[in-house]
Image (cartoon, rainbow, N blue to C red; front, side):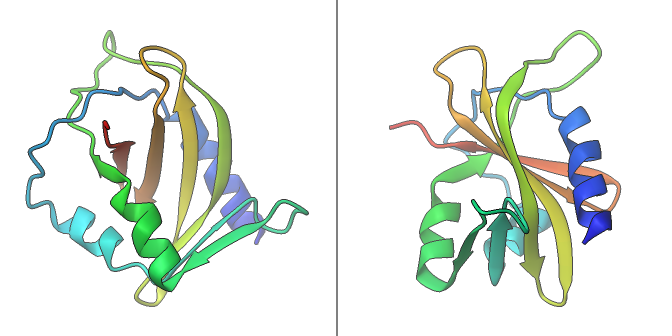
Length: 126
């Protein structure tokens, strides 16, 4: 449990995200893995703990599309109001965070630390 919290905080440090995904979803195998998740929990161990599974999890994940913003040393966007947690895919748990972008329309960004990569997904535009 301590490792999940620590990993979540480290993940927050990596979260400089963009709200500007496109309608084109690339066939990213990690995005496909995320869509096969069986459980997601935010605010682990707190009074506000929130768990998603089954149809509720599918509906939550369907709100997001891959982030196509090209990140770099001079290309970042700030986030706020982050909530940490974990997502269960197959037999593995990965740290996640759900944050709101501070610029633009203020959409949510879901970030998942998968190995050496952080996969970011943006809330779809209406």
